[in-house]
Image (cartoon, rainbow, N blue to C red):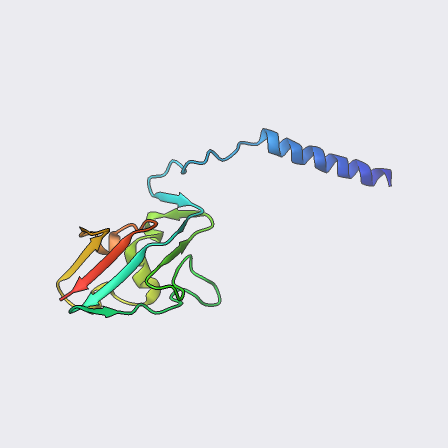
Length: 140
C-alpha cells in the first residue's frame, strides 16, 4: 500500500512539473507563413450562380465515415472549416472545397467572376477562405 501512495505522489509531482516547467503555447501562430490558424472554427459562405440561377451546394459535402475538416451541413450556403490542429493555406483554399465536393470549379460555365465580401477577386481556387467571408461565384 505504501508503494501505491509513493507512486501516486510521484505522478502528482511529475504532472505539476509539466504544468509549471514545460513551455506553454504562446497563443500565436507557429512561425510558418503557410499556417493560417491553429484549432480554427470558421464559417465562410459560398453562393454560386449560373446565368443568374442559383446553384444549390449539396448538404454533407465532406461528411462520411470520417468527417473532413472542411464540410457542409444543412445550413447552406455555409462551409464549415473545423480544424482541431494546424490549418495550412492549402487546407482552407476555395479550390480545396471543390476537390472535396468532387467538382471542377470551372465546370459551371465560362466567364467566371468572383466577389469576396462584395469586392471583385481573381484568386478563384487559390482564395484563402476566412471566417465570415461572403464568397460569390457567377458564371455567364
